[in-house]
Image (cartoon, rainbow, N blue to C red):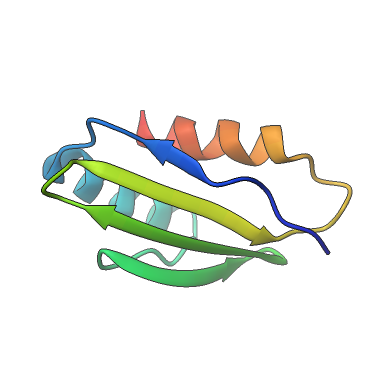
Length: 81
């Protein structure tokens, strides 16, 4: 197992962050709160959200080697919308 580089998403308002949490949960990804970690389909994610700077930092810290990081980043950015 290996991980991916951290992804930073700027200009993520509290409303957009709440929408992201709801979208992720609808996909079966257990995201809640402003900082935590979760596992989803054999991958581990860690994140922090800073409402004051409207910045989300998320990282896939463990993933199967056959799943490329760019696909994971694409899915995260798709959830953010």
